[in-house]
Length: 180
Image 1 (cartoon, rainbow, N blue to C red):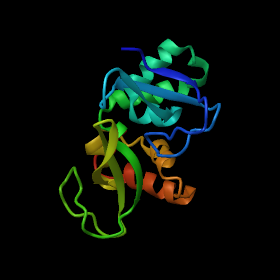
Image 2: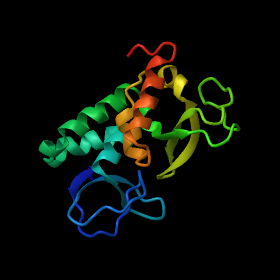
Image 3: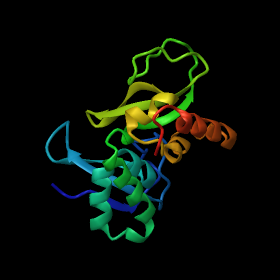
Image 4: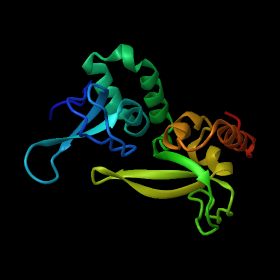
């Protein structure tokens, strides 16, 4: 198996598997090599560098150490290492206020009240990310074993403004057992 890569995008046709946005021509991108699910050989799953570091940390670190792109990836390697240390953190896929009161928290199993902060989760399976439910903002620390999530949430929830992110950060940090 050929190792994972970090390289400039040769065209602007590829979409990031993490955020589903196009990767611009010439932009550095992370390619995770996987066995081809549809035939012989391999296929490459393309990610923006930050999406790869946040959501596929082990493969990203492998590529960062072998590709020679270290000067561009030092901060992202730290983020990927953090994701390996806290095994559930790569599941973070943004946050929002609950639009209904029907979703259950994956940690405490209680309903998430309409209007409360909830963190969206995704799971990587079958070469794609699938929605995996939500966690109360107040359950973040026991579920993720950390409250250092705002950078990841900011990345995947570009619609949130700084005031909303600050409010969510306060929610994460004032919840019981939030001692990180």
